[in-house]
Length: 212
View 1: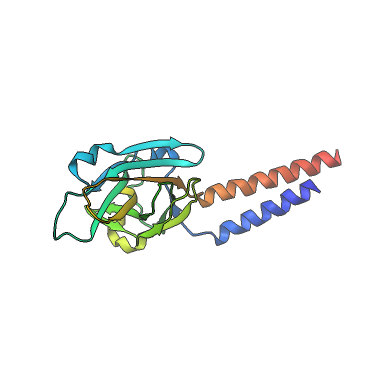
View 2: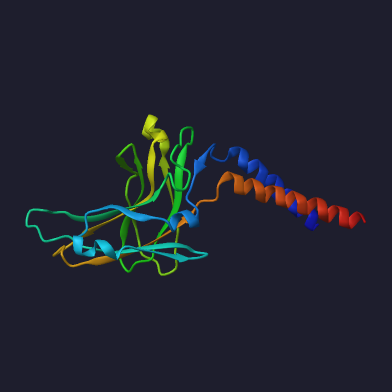
């Protein structure tokens, strides 16, 4: 019975890979730990507060104090930060023929923040639409995807891949707040394929053992 269950599970997983997205890339936990603040409009005094922490197995935590100097005519007072991994460093500088870049993101701050995916290609920053993500003490990951087809030929000149964090500060924007955002890789189709093959092997092993 166990062998049959493994056989069925393996079959379903292998079939799923045929319908999975043709080609996408993600950032591994090791890649995410290399991330840096690529661009931000936070007050210069807070720029050095950016931190990256591994919260394995849940994900990689990013945190930074964010604030803006007071400016009477500057509403809305958005603060933002683009967090990127050097694409050349992780072997993802040329994504020609790849459909999308995907990550799982979660907000574990005590207030909502707006999150998006960020790609810098040929010196130009590109973002998906921001999504307002509510805070959760336990990471509740949302799936984010960036359509790389929108980059055209610039897909061969990827410089940074990562995420963007944004917040609308109300009242006096010089009063700092800090985001706490977690990121985790999305399992790639190859990983699903390996799981399917593993189930097949277990099914064959179980059947042979039973016959013996």
